Image (cartoon, rainbow, N blue to C red):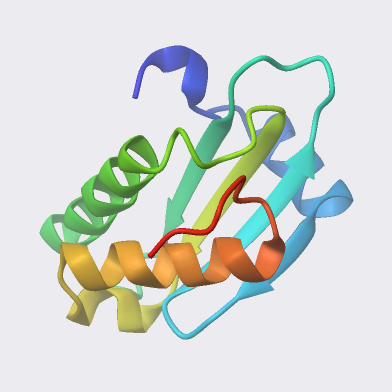
Amino acid sequence: MNKRQRIKKNEEFQKVFKSGKSFANRQFIVYCYRKEEQTEFRIGLSVSKKVGNAVTRNRIKRYVRQAFLEMKDELQNNMDYVIIARHQAAKIDFHESKKSLQHVLRIARVLKKNIK
């Protein structure tokens, strides 16, 4: 992920929270916000201290970034995504994290084509 694909500022997070739609499962909550003028998707990550220590939180963020990198061709480019990790996300490995994110994104109907 390059810097253009990250949401960093609080105002941008708040805009996605207030104007976007949310979808969830046991491990993740995903907020999706459509921006027509945007050429590539952006993601913002939020992992609370309640989820685990710094090592655990950073691992979850790495897994989410890698999953989005692998799914970049299937995702709509004119969207902002904010991913909030729940406590259950600390207990799963990368492949389960990717499956869980695909599940939530399929519910949100933001995937271009069906992923197996």
